[in-house]
Image (cartoon, rainbow, N blue to C red; front, side, top):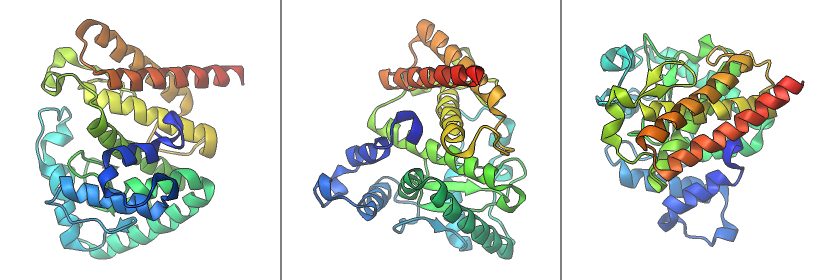
Length: 294
């Protein structure tokens, strides 16, 4: 959401939801103040998980990994894909700890290089991400969970190139920011209504009818990935986790149209949810216009 909603957005969002944990005046806050406030706020709302340390921890301890995976094993009425229904198959603790250590070292080196490419965004990443976890999975490249704020899961990262890891981390960090955004301003009028197949819309990445929360997240995530290509990576990105821009941009705009058409009939989104979609649609229209002109 860094390029979609402005470079100051991430700081303002966190200051709003975790204000009681800031001890300095707003004009004097440093990166460490934001990281500390975020860690304390997260610990207050998810006490069952390990309390985060300041900064990003690349998890190599097996017990901490197991604790951090537990939120993924909680079933949800919004789990619409087969891989989500067999949750223990979806992600499990990686038993080869040497592989975990190698994964962590590989990703640490890449993230350091990413900071040099775009320092502003990766500072925001360092605020909203407390843990990088390297589980095993037969059916996933990684993920996040609304029950594990601050946690990004990456599966077999050494099998992926640098652009793919870059886009995966942008993708998952955007989910984390969306979870926080929803705690500030609700996105849906009635969360229970989202499980009704009559209320599904077309998602941006999979181009399939999915629950509204998945579709809204897919729109914001895809828009942010496309803007990172526009500003940092280039549209020739060698990512294998997202489609090429020529496919992803119009598909994401079509997803915006799908969700807004549903909204016109069902009024399922709260005002903030509508604002998110309309903002992304405007950005995508501009991006597509520039692509055509080029």
